[in-house]
Image 1 (tube, each protein chain N blue to C red):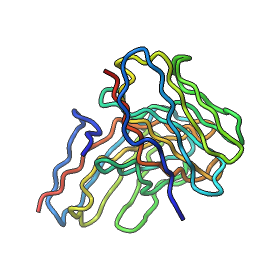
Image 2 (image 1 turned 45 degrees about the horizontal axis):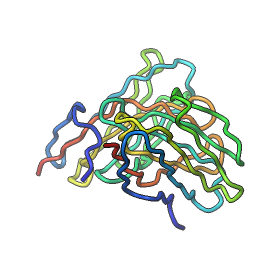
Image 3 (image 1 turned 90 degrees about the vertical axis):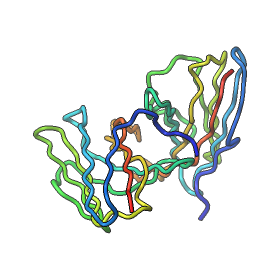
Image 4 (image 1 turned 30 degrees about the horizontal axis):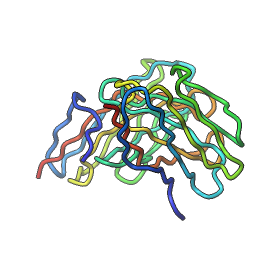
Length: 111
Length: 112
């Protein structure tokens, strides 16, 4: 498959463990944040989003936490599965549908 | 419902040539955004179109341009290709502002 990023930080976890992926954002005025998952050979896929008036949002097996004080986002994945192996990006929206992406983190799930 | 489609999926060009990439958004989506993805720079915003108007532009040279047609399909053009333009070019569509963006699979451009 195509390489998304050759030198991304990698988080290695055992299948069944919980994963936490962190991200720092740049603009304190940003009001909307999204987590994307990108598998090899595919475009980014929406996972979960959060608005700046919230601290936490939960989805199916995923939770996003937002700390506006330190401009930090985290994505928690419960009971990580091999299918969760991918590169994960956080993004902040700036202006008309302009997304500013973080560098990405590669998640490797081992059986 | 069909997803975002991009053509071609792979393209090889030589320096100095120009290239046109195409994006067909999800039916009903009027906003189309383009991104460049490289291992070194990550995902970077190129521009966004809504109802045939460019509303936002990233920090790329004028060699990068785009347009949107009345059916919301979009094209981007890169002229005078450089080696550094080798990248995965991604298109995303959405219903409008503040709506979820759906990405296509991308066009892998290699400049030799």
